[in-house]
Amino acid sequence: MRICPSCDENFPDTHSLCPDCKVDLVSSMDQKDTPDLVVLCTVLNEAKAHIMRGFLESEGIPCQLENISFHAQPAPVADLMKVRLWTLKEDADRARQLLEERESIQICSVCEKEVAEQDEVCSHCGERLEER
Image 1 (cartoon, rainbow, N blue to C red):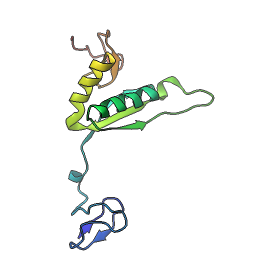
Image 2 (cartoon, rainbow, N blue to C red):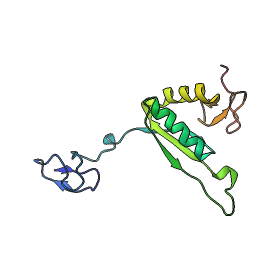
Image 3 (cartoon, one colour):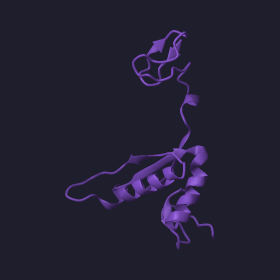
Image 4 (cartoon, helix red, strand yellow):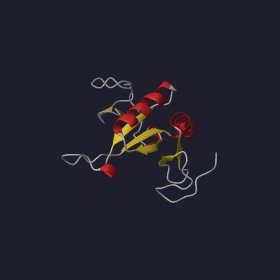
């Protein structure tokens, strides 16, 4: 049996394309069929996250945004306005390097949070940052 990864319908082995979703059928829905994604970084400014995503995609690194914001009325609560940038695991190191060069930021190697370039200690986890 073959399975549609979009609608989870089963089809005979003679089929290669889902007639409804128009996507290629797979032999199983194992974890191996899904890409290995990692959180590249978390930013507190949604507009900046979109700019970072556009920059990385222009460099050939696909990414996705996950808005984990909590919007309180009348104004958002500062530390609850977070957006995570996700990318493929194999692209993460290059993406972090590009962002550091572009944004004059550091990414903590322990907690992977964004910190200011001049910081010597990560304000999120307390880890001493590597010297450049």
